[in-house]
Image 1: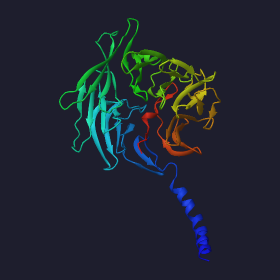
Image 2: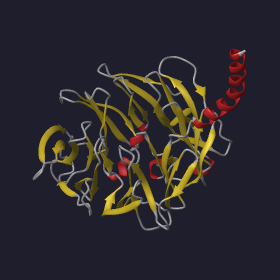
Image 3: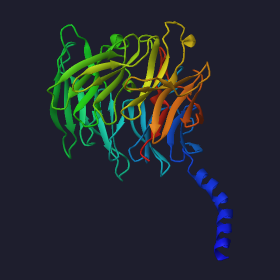
Image 4: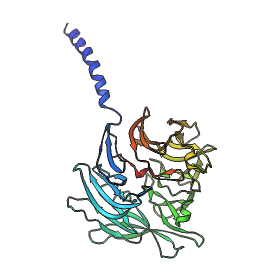
Length: 411
């Protein structure tokens, strides 16, 4: 009789608790984003969102590695709303305080992969700020006359690029800089030769393969040329192998290493229009075998790795329509890296396009826009997660979505 009574109680309780457990584990509960709406910085976690600036003109939110800080640029409002340089501010998510760091900062500011350190450029000078308990924060200058930089994977040193001299055809020198208590330690890393018929003046940021044995970057020519073609390069860590592997636009989100294989994926093709001759390619190292995965008649406009064996690409029909408002907008496809069928995974309306695929654990996240407004969507189930987000600036069919969205992937 006692066993029968316990069984009845269990059957009554079970239907009550199972739905509540399912609700508690909503897929976006641990997903957190910093985004721009009506020029202001907002934060969303799960189903809750809040505004953290008021009446500003904010762009380029970036999370620190531990998720306690958001760096952003604040600029003056202009007709096109683009902020290329501005005041660098830091927002502490726990204290709910904002701190102004420095003016005239380039939008290439980067958090270290560990520790709360941020580096940034003012003109051609490189600064670093190590966040400690002392306030006000005092950034230190660690290099001058550089073109670009990135943190090394160790989060201690930085890799910089600089012209060897003021001559147009001078070589580009890569240097390793380790900040010290007094003066930084600067060591030569590699010299990129620039021929008499070449016009390379700078590099992009640097990206490392998973095993830290290879790095990739763009060689960027003078401004008028860089709008149409830049050269993707690969360099071995020991400097014994340097190879130019393709031409592409100056889009740093258009080349990425596979998560745990030495495969570099990139969207190749010259010409500033995003809807003409943009093909996804892979380079396997150290063989340098190349494979193209874009079907004939299509162009790829964004991508992200999902494991080593498949990619998610933002793909549309190729089109030479000069009216940007009439160019086709993309959908996102799952693409196997080996021979296999491409599978469409998003279904925007005819007037919308899907861009910037990203992943957080098992969630697929992307941006959907009709050119007038933007939203963040999440799958499974293709649900809108953030609405009325600012639209990033565009150039010939390319949108710089880092301007308006940053996902906190440190949770």
